[in-house]
Image 1 (cartoon, rainbow, N blue to C red):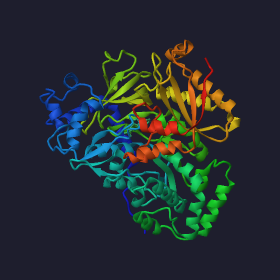
Image 2: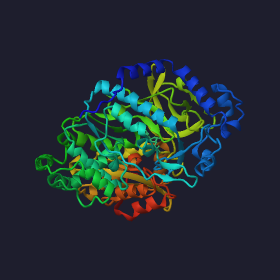
Image 3: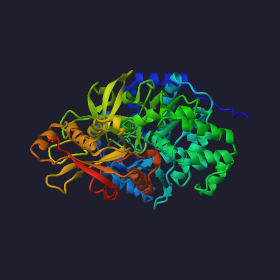
Image 4: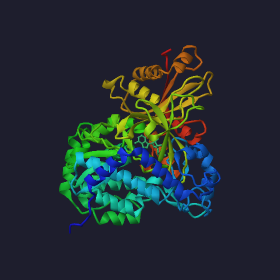
Length: 571
Ligand code: AMP
């Protein structure tokens, strides 16, 4: 029976987006007015003396810029169950746990219906533009999505990662249907209690529905690469399950087993076909189009800390388009990718002026004096830190992300994600960000391609236990790589940090030689398991690119798994 479903009106969505971005300035004023009217009675705003004013000028004069730390006491009272209007007019009933991979531990942020609606608006907007370029048929999607454990806080609020709160919302499923993007896996798999088991079943469902799969997606593209790396390990077991029509005994959760039993029937032809395809591939190049002949594209956030996985993703995807998904955070969404034709390295995001009120702190200026500018006042070519005022109780909240303005779509700016603002590697006058580290790793891993050096994942640490302190870069690599090559990689990493403070400090040995530590295969999987154990979800996982001394457990995982170490002789 063919299900009757209402599809989204793509032309109407695009038209709405165009008219809204043409009027971005007014839409921003109206959005701020709406946020302040809906939440004016909240204690936080009441104490700031706005007295009912809703214009941007009064707002900026009365409301301070804040970080998560500043709001922590307010959020904690909400988490503890206070039902008075603290940050929002309507009480908050759900809390999101941000991935916390950058800080080391998850942060709580409020989640509400308005945030859900803005999430869906972003999804619909980028879908409209994407589907115009890359139409899909009414099939299924292999969505590598996972839920975290949803728990109750001491005060009785539901708490889960933001993606979990979204996936569990009934509107999510309806929107996915309207976008012809239904997940091929049953809910029991998405919400399964163990992500290793869910991942296996996602792959199995994908293979069962292989001809119907229209695209492959995940929130962050790390999950896609992770899934196909796992496929390399488990493909024979998957084939055995398909051949016999019986799920491996490794899947132990009864709800997942019974949901899978409904889909799995003995199919020796399919098992033979998959086996033949897998054996015919050279180092798994082109795996995705071989397995899924009707896939039109791969979709997930691919910018920022996801860029290092692009090479591997392209390897699996061969010539399939890679389309970066939108830009947002647990705190709120920011922009949609409306240029799906652009490769992920160049992807930009257009701010939706009605999903929040946005300000931008210019980075060029002295941090203390820099005055935030409004959405339509940003300048092309400049870098800014993003400030969000949301429908979910965050007012002038410093997100900590750095973006560059690459142009305007009508009157709304197009942002390129640059990096997190906090400096990661710094010992004295040196300043290196996540982006600098990424570029250094890229340069060093390109050194010797004949050696088949593949950096599977990486992180870093500032080691101040030596005198002088020095940078430590951790690499998990595949393949056999000679010591001489890794020594050269270590030198190249050291030379690739071109920041003047670093170079001059290295020259006078105020910073010691950079150290490259190679860790055992599987070390980064242990880090992922550690974060999932803390309540993070694989869907939102981002490898911590710099591990501070306070993040002791992750540092221990890295240090305990070092198999070789090299010191640079570059200076
Ligand atoms: P979370 O802490 O899980 O809510 O993740 C939010 C953070 O992920 C943002 O503040 C960004 O640093 C990063 N992020 C989200 N979307 C993108 C994107 N499209 N490109 C690059 N980084 C992103």
